[in-house]
Length: 252
Image (cartoon, rainbow, N blue to C red):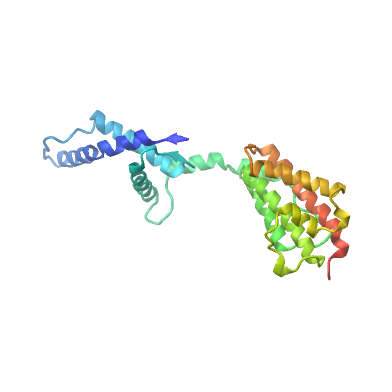
């Protein structure tokens, strides 16, 4: 993470001198002289400019920063607001070339397309609710945007949502009770019938999937793109298997 405390201290210390150098430059431009104000090339003014440039960039692009001095938090918020105001044009559109270049490199269409091409749609033998389709789409997009932890978390949500949907459509759960506070393991046992008992192959596969996803979401396991793709594909496979297992039990 970026510790920006020193840059903030520099900004605070030399901001007034920088403002004076701007005033001096303006006066000299119209032929007036200002005594005692620093020149534009004053080392202190140069240090301020360099610190301000780094701080403005981090204010727009950093995901997290470290500010060890509590009195400097508000100063950084001020710098961030000024950076946002500066980067937006009069029409309200962002005009930062540096920001565009950084995002274009991170989210290049070619990268997205490659990830999109190696994923696949959900294929089922029966209709599924729009919520399930939306989760498939969102999970796929998280992978394509190279957000592995989000992809894994959404993959687990997809399987959980499918289990609840199957229980509702098979009559084992009412719409009113669909948001039970029970843990997911208990919920699986309650919502799925004896054909997917705790010792059945499908249930063991579901449990293994849940453990793998939880290891990323709730522990120190680091998510990566290969594991995200593997769990996303497993979520689709389990979804297909579950709908196939219960298709004949759905109420018309």
